[in-house]
Image 1 (cartoon, rainbow, N blue to C red):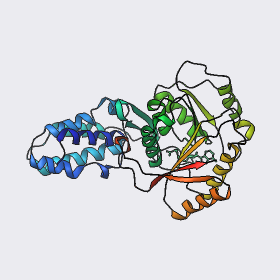
Image 2: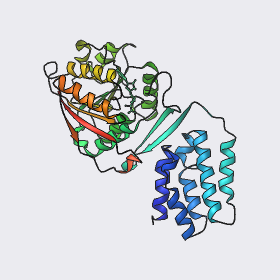
Image 3: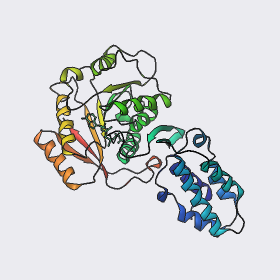
Image 4: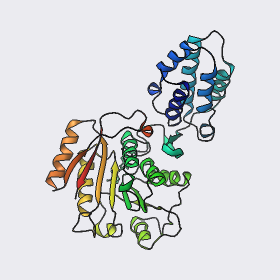
Length: 338
Ligand SMILES: C[S@@+](CC[C@H](N)C(=O)[O-])C[C@H]1O[C@@H](n2cnc3c(N)ncnc32)[C@H](O)[C@@H]1O
């Protein structure tokens, strides 16, 4: 049986990141409560979740907190005779709140770091999948943290950054020299910028709102002394030109959950070809993480890579450290050779 303190921490990590309620260790909680009845474990879980300063300031959705507390009360009632006032008081507080279309998620990283994001409640909203964090993003960040040397003091270009989890986690833990977030969707870029600032990273000023000027900002050098230098670029793989890419000179290119549609992958591959050795001073290393939802899409991606003359290899699964929560086993990382 898990130590009560360790159990409380597992509840905390999953709750603050609003991971699926079913993935929280309910069965172990019930077992522990039956073995040693009392309120101290439940009060500890309450303190590490609903009452935690991160939750108070940056709360997961109202519905999520309501369902969490309801479940906690059920577990308590099935194992104890007396009701626990603190649980009902917390639930009453949540019941008085209105639901919004957005919520916060707090991802606790190893060594005390944390990424806090504003995310959409719907997986697809505003015509994009980019306003939530996908499992491949967690997986890629977890892998990066185990391979810090690949990112340390280097220029990293992220494609299809979405609202920023992977990049912000890498900036906070892997010491890159420059981190270039990119995406093509207006609303995603707006939320991405807000999330970067929410996490205390200072964005390089943009010369103007359009892509080439944002990229030129890089060539002009850092406007603040922050390391990493952080840039957000509007970059659409379908229309970006070699001229626009010339200033980037990335050492490492990464992307999470961008292999889900043949049209999207062919634009992605076209863009990677524009960054290939003949166009760039150095050959960037490329790592793409994705969830294999459909075997045909995965095989097609491999065939498209072969046709484009881009080599690839599967990166062996890594050790699933704390940051990864309950990431699905069908997430994989490919290294591509331009
Ligand atoms: C499934 S989301 C993944 C977001 C994030 N990387 C994650 O894993 O949480 C796919 C992202 O790719 C971006 N995207 C799709 N097509 C694109 C294109 N042609 N150019 C640039 N970004 C694109 C979308 O805007 C979206 O943010």
